[in-house]
Image (cartoon, rainbow, N blue to C red; front, side, top):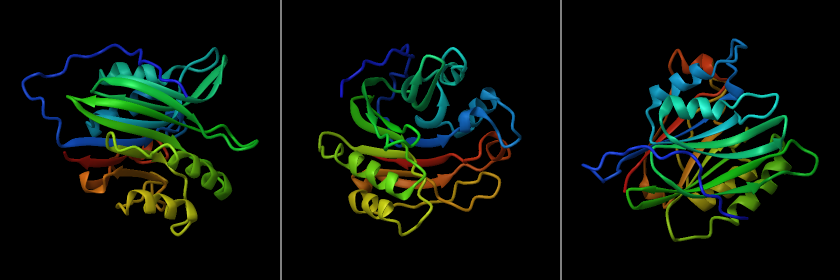
Length: 247
């Protein structure tokens, strides 16, 4: 697993206040930028990101370009002025698609983790080290599979990557776990400790907490909330999930 230097251009950050805390972290499955009305509209997703006003955003189901698909991440990066890292789960010349991270802070290094399971749809995680004015955060953005056996295998592989005390680790994304007492969630809760899990799916009438944010050490997590507005309820079939963390 090799580090890849982020290629996104740096943006200017304020130098008058170098204390990043509290930070706002978000995860958002953008459904390929296709809303609940069936319309492909990246600018609508960008407007939801403006509403959230987070410092670091993990995205799932992001079109990343190719000969037959647009690069939605580039559109969202331009709209926010943030730096970007991509972690394609599907990486073919005609179609690149997967996870991404947008951040107002520099990305020092990034890695991709292959979580594909047998013949199921390719899955992965984007593992990025973010420098928040000298305070390092490890951001692991992922989108897990639809079947229980698939998720268990993917979580086992993910947890093997988290044995580090060098910096706080934030795991976030679409976990796709429908079962509250499923083994997948029990393993994650055991590793990260319990956190609030508001319902995020489907966006027009949330019934399931598919999107999650965990942080280790747990005491850094201050508050978790769903971003539900008229725009976010139509821009994707998932609502964004937001967490506030402190130093």
